[in-house]
Amino acid sequence: MTTQPIVREFEADLTVVAAVEAATDVVALTLATADGTPLPPWTPGAHVDLVLGEDLVRQYSLCGSPADTSSYRVGVLRAPDSRGGSKAVHAELREGATVRVRGPRNHFPLVASPRYLFLAGGIGITPMLPMIAEAEAAGAEWRLVYGGRSRSSMAFLDELAAYGDKVTLLPQDEVGFPDLDALLGTPEPGTLVYTCGPTGLLDAVEERCAASWPAGSLHLERFSAKAPGADEQDSAFELVLQRSGLTLEVPADRSIFEVCREAGVSVVGSCLEGVCGTCETEVVDGDVEHRDSILNEEEKESNEFMMICVSRCRGASLTLDL
Ligand code: FES
Image (cartoon, rainbow, N blue to C red):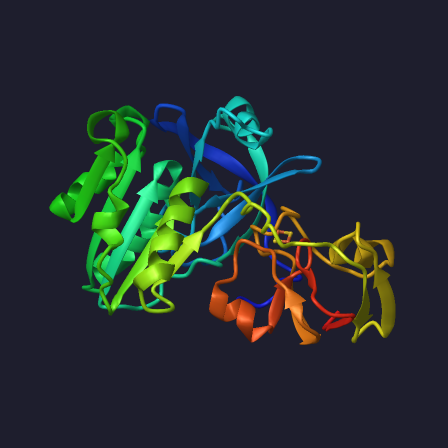
């Protein structure tokens, strides 16, 4: 990747021009400007923030067509364990309502490849829709394996029907869980694996790809933070902000983001849990302890960028381009 830190990005109140039930407990919202002004372009894998209240900002993948600059489409699952975001969407965002939208950003871009294996779980199908359309248009060989609780809970089946046997549907109540050992047991050099869905699926796919697939084969996107590593320990360190000419102390119980905010340094953030990428910041010097759920291993090792809402410093001092 890596996307550049976004300081000034699109932010506007968009109107819900359609709110359609895409499956049980899944609503597909089409959002547009009130005056028909075109929306910023995006590429498959991009997401937007929906600002659903004070301190209630959630990320949703764009699942319409990038060729359509008149609207954005997102699919939102009413999550049983909702922390407020999906409940607010389902309760308040009916046709005619407005919602503040930021972005789009893409931390899950579709890298050109002759072959793809797409693995979607539940609402994780949303970023896959524009991806498979692009793969199809590019003439790539691809297949999608899409699992869900039941057929009625699996969104966008009507759209997927057009792809015939390139799409395998695995409703859990009919056929059980996807057999990941069969799908990923034999590495296929030259095939890129894209996956999005519940944490359990992503962790299982990550584990299998790490065991035998060539480095760089797996691309995944998380919308909830990874469980902290057992060896993660918070300790204090010195923070040098190169452009601001400031040296600050980051105590063990504060994040870099919080320390910068408190010092009056302009930083932007949204999820504050390492999943959205808004706070991505360039590293000038120092050894970063990456704790986000966005960067892949290669990007973490390059030590070029970090998510300052969760990641810290392994050593005594860290210098950032802030
Ligand atoms: Fe979302 Fe840091 S604010 S990754």
